[in-house]
Image 1 (cartoon, rainbow, N blue to C red):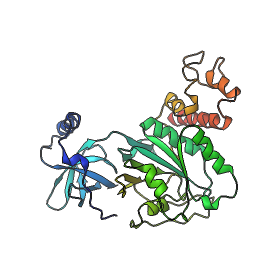
Image 2: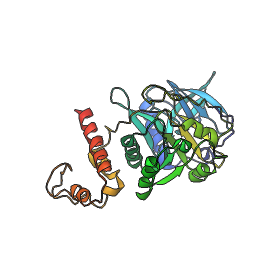
Image 3: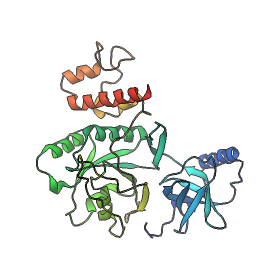
Image 4: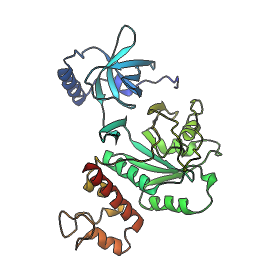
Length: 327
């Protein structure tokens, strides 16, 4: 946990009409008087409590009002002081939210109010290209920018991963290649600017070490790679927000070995593949599934070499897994 003082921009001005209506709706739903209290920023969520940063930059562990929409790191909330700690009464602002299905298939928020998704992969553990595509689709569905980071570049033994990164760059994504031996994190800090970003990626790709480079004063345990099946063990158990020196915010998320998109429609998945854009809506049949239908614009683009077979197969896998999960 960082002890950096921070003043929330939201708390220095009056609530907008939209935010006031949101709080009024929550007041009506809970039957609570939300006229008192002040805005705060959720730093991390721990079960039925959340760590909130106040206007003064202090940190307060707050309980959640019953039936409150689940706040997560990055959320702006209305909270009130209680005798012992504090209580969160309402969400003030949530312009975007990163969600993923839990074990039962229910969507669970991970982080909120994100501007940039930093997708981290590395030579070890071996990257899963379909997982990278899932993150890109998720970023598109959220309406946030995605940037790909090839970390641990000092461990490269062939050109496969730089070629993979170059392919994403050709699609218009911003990319960075980095490793722990670089003297500073200027490349990352410059790329982030004053945005709120979330780091995502497989466990063991070095997300925590990236945070250490960006925030040397942060005390974060860097986990060792698992020796079993090249799968990293979890070193982070909950999403946590950190303030960056340049004014941005960083939300670290738990490492994942899969990223379900059962909540995203097939149409939304297709629109998350940038190279598909010129062909979407041009199939002969409006309900084209892009499998073997005659007059499919995507299949024609694939045959013409305008869409890579690997990316098209990845698209089909994502759509197929979503359909199977929803049956």
